[in-house]
Image (cartoon, rainbow, N blue to C red):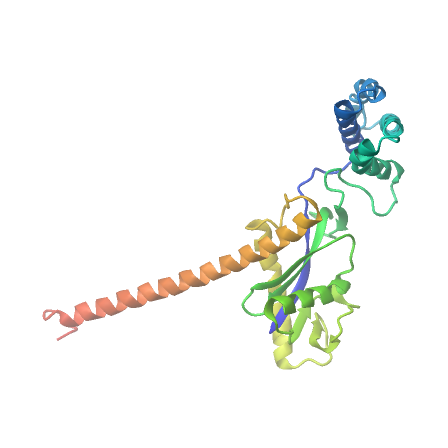
Length: 305
C-alpha cells in the first residue's frame, strides 16, 4: 500500500495564555483549595481581595511600566500564597499528596521566564505546548501535534497518532509507519511526505519520497508524489467536520483519543459518501430500465413502432 504522511496541530480548548491570567487563576485555585482543606490558612484569604483588581491593571495598555509593576505584584501574591500553603501542609502526609499537583504547577509557573523552555501555558492542561505554524493568519497554536498517514489514492486514514511535547516532523515518521503496520498488517510500499520530513530516521529510507525530490523517481512515483498534496484538504475536512480543530478532551490520553476518533469519523464519512454514490447509481439504473420497458410496450409510441 502507498501512503501520504503529514502532521497537523490539534489545538486544545483553552483560552489564550497570558502571564496575568495564569497568575490570577493560580491564586484562585490555591485559595479555593486552601479554604476547603486547610482551615488555618488565612494569608491567601487576605491576599485575594488585593489580587483581584490586578487582573485589569495587568492587561496590555500604553503605560507599559504600570503594567509590569502590577504584573510583578500579582506574581508576588502568588508566591506568598504558594509559600504559605506549602509550609502549612509540609508536616501532613495526606495534605501533601493532595496539594502536590497544584503546588508543582505553581512552582513551575513561578520559575519560568520569557525565554524558558517547557513553559506552562494552562493549569488544567499542562501538557499543552506552543507550536509555530508560520502562517500569516495563524502564526502559532497551543495544543499537541498529530501525525497522520492517508492512503495515496482513496484517502482513508490508517494512522493518527498524537505526539507529546515538541517533536521534529522527520522523527515522527517511524511511529506513523509502525501504526500503519499495526492497523493493516502490511508494510507500506511507498510513503510520500513533504520537505518537513527531511532528515527522518525511518529504517527503509528507499521507500520514502520527499516533495521536490529529483533522483530515483519513475513516472509512476512522480505522478503519485504530486498526489501527496491531496492530504491537505483532507486535514481541512477533519478540522472543519471533525474535532481536530479543537480538542475538548482532558490530558495526554484525551489528545490520543481525540486523534483516533477524528480519523475514524473521517473514514466513516468517506464510506457513507461511497454508499450514497452506489445507491444513486442503482436507482438511476432501475429508473432507466423501467423507462425503457414502458416505452417498448406502448403500441402508439413511434419509437417502438
